[in-house]
Length: 538
Image (cartoon, rainbow, N blue to C red; front, side, top):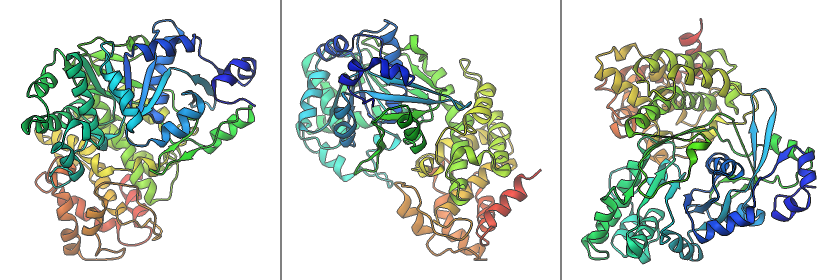
């Protein structure tokens, strides 16, 4: 059997070759020695997306001789990832690329030179890394909620507030610890650095900067740090927070993939479900298409990731590309399928794309309602991008992506995925009342929050930071009610909330439409399918 560790790679290269698994084509020991001695790239968020994309690009460039330093992985949220996956497997991972024709590409990724957590032992090592003049870039895939320091009501979260009133050395929350590490870099020599968010949210770098600067400013105000420290963070000749757009569908580890690996003799296939509900395995399965566009604002230089397909460009182009993808060509389609997939009992996005009404719905959202307000970024063609999404990526039957996963944190996604399109219609004096699929998705999300599927059976709603608050508004509603006034009382606090939708939907002219659609969707069992059929059947 083949095991994912350095000893197995060294002893059984022929076995890996027979299994169709390619191995790193570089001296990994030498790479690790160089990287730990003079780190250039540190990445926070050691989960599946990082291993399937940034780490894999680094591995490719190491094998091609373009890079000679790897990446150091760090985890600030779920330390079990480091203890249960990275450590037992010598920081190696197996990348399994699932192609639409049913074939797979299997490759061991060895680019991670070191993996650390943010516990006491890890913080000591991270302090050394942050103080290294050689460090050029710190990147992040910590999810959109990882940048939040405020509660839904706008107040600072208590744990963050406690950190802000204390000192850098006593920081307990991740963003405060990150700010404390930046303070150590400031004290060590005020060296330059780029902090690059690679998370799937609008203006991700701006969110990171705002959080870090808020904490640093609070420390400066009560004398925990020098006033020169916030000035250091604000000086773009030394510290930058570039924005980026990332795109690669990376589902949870799939049992069918594990079975396929076992059949070729690969032994390490067990999925770990951590105490924080992270699903991770020694292997990571993902699609082939991938895009990463980064604002080219890096005061200390950067690894040559552009040689691996990463696009570095000016801020306006990144912004247009991000809006094209997140607001129109992929993410809104994903969210629509997630909401209605859960209501209709689907467990695979690819299966939903065979559903005539659901397929028609995403075509309307993308092509008819979204594309008319997309600004072409110039580096990726919007029409070609959405054609690939609808024609290749979402229908890929070998991608085990579930609507239940994508439905996570939907309240944090609505503003960008649908609100921006509504705002564009209003700004361009377009008829917002002509929208039919986007209001139906919003109504469907409210229907989804009831936790009852189209058969009238209860289901588990995916985690969301606003779930308790939202469900309280809907608590008095049941399937089969016929009270428009009751619907209005329940939905008005939600639909008027511009922090959720980026607009007040009533002021935008869509609130009443959503209410009427919600009423239709809740007439009783089978109502969801009936509304979809009425709206999207040819």
